[in-house]
Image (cartoon, rainbow, N blue to C red; front, side, top):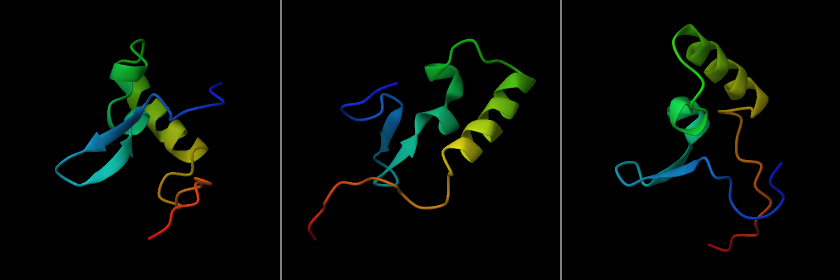
Length: 64
């Protein structure tokens, strides 16, 4: 488990000007052993485990 620094799967999208979870957008890149139907199931499970779409849980104090 990583305790410091950004998640190594965090990926910046120039086109969308936002970050995406690489485990959800490109699981094979970060978890090379996943293939076929296993990839789809793993993506669904990861999405649920990280609460994708439920808002960011970052605790950084960002000033506008």
